[in-house]
Amino acid sequence: MEADYRESLVAYRTAMSLAGGMLAEGIITAGDYDKIDRIIANKYGLSLGSICCRKPLIDAGNRGNMRHTEGGETHGTDN
Image (cartoon, rainbow, N blue to C red):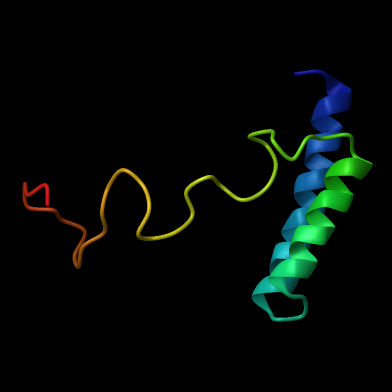
């Protein structure tokens, strides 16, 4: 990873961490967060399509390759 790209990525992630905190505290809305995300990514020359940007691809408790159960065990069932 090039040093310039790494520095840009660290700056982006730092700014978005702060924005995420403001979102969690209700200071900004999800729409504001998305706008900030686009602006900050553009500022640091990062593509929003990059795996380094935005929220994780799977961030909802009911989406992914494993279902959540009470206690965390699936007990061998696949339904």
